[in-house]
Length: 111
Image (cartoon, rainbow, N blue to C red; front, side, top):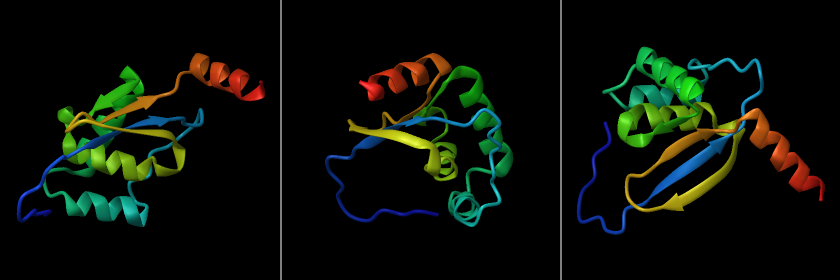
């Protein structure tokens, strides 16, 4: 369990843009990911898997809908994060890049 002592000011969050390969399989057994699940007692592999299903179905996942699941997903998707945006408190979001967005980014990078 994480504990925080003392006064904390200017708390901020990050949002992440993730590009996954077509046949991506979520691996919750990777050591760093498994450790992250154990760190947050309020989550479980089942909750993280459900959060990932929601992410792939909806294209985004807000930190407010599952703070611990958000943190675990960020660890599990670390190699696929293509952008990170820092902003105000507790607004974190994970956004999947659509095929259309991927093609647009690729065309911009070719310029």
